[in-house]
Length: 125
Image (cartoon, rainbow, N blue to C red; front, side, top):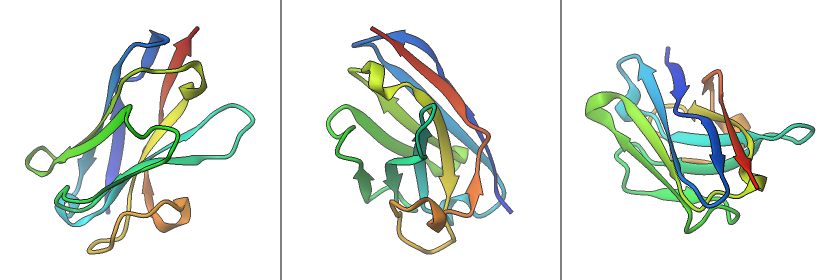
């Protein structure tokens, strides 16, 4: 069982930066691929970024490539999302997710089986 808690959301002006954190409980964190998703009002949840168990492989949605960086610290059971050059269209609730152990990071939400409660990110123009 994995429990996930996001933090670091807030209100920021366009062009600014935020760093989200996802703290995980459980003994298998280093075995789980991890991902970030987001959901804006009236829209479906969408993939943002994913990272492999040891961090050697990262994948990004085209909309955030070059602006966002996903990373993880397995010693701290924590994953991060550094968000730079934020745009109003990045406004959403951001969720972290953990996939089944020993699998690769994926872009589809149904390939993740543990989810956090979400943290709100609001980017003003």
